[in-house]
Image 1 (cartoon, rainbow, N blue to C red):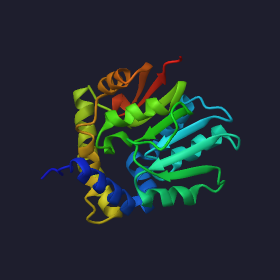
Image 2: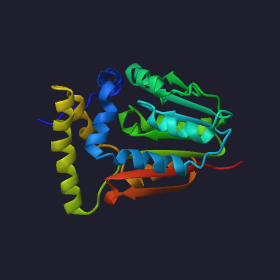
Image 3: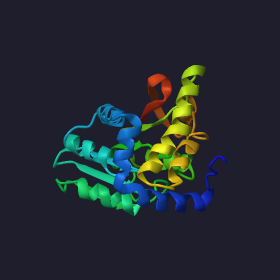
Image 4: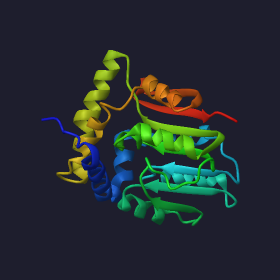
Length: 239
């Protein structure tokens, strides 16, 4: 039987609790199921953010803080790098890995950002939007907190158009990935949630249209592996 994703507040509660439960070995899981490629995709996202020393950046749904850490190396000691996540367990891992002490971490909801309007040079998110109850609310908040000319970068699963590639990808993601996860955390249904959460997640074009609908311009995306993974890039229009 396919996993049924909770709705509304139940989904938020599920995500918060379950991500905390797997936080300790989440990076190991990602390394195994992507053969380490998630690290390359995240470096690509950070490079596309075009940050410079002194910039202010927010990494929403930051998880264990691996993207946050890469961002901080770009903004430097004179910049501001903040990671925000709903899961206290994930934030605990993120804080532990930040040996420089130059990043700060907040527990919060990505649809209600505790950030001043027009204050950030960039906002990033890696594999986080599909865990939200309302993606549109998040995009509106991201647009609000960005400075004019600020950048939004999103890394997540994409939709594959080539039938044979799509079938192979679905077999791996829906059949193999949960088994790998349950070897690490026996009986954990979060690994059934992961593939199911991608089903209703917007396609590359749909997410681009959503971004444009929220006022972003120069929206583009880059596909990896025929669209299995994709990085969106969008700008807030300059005044």
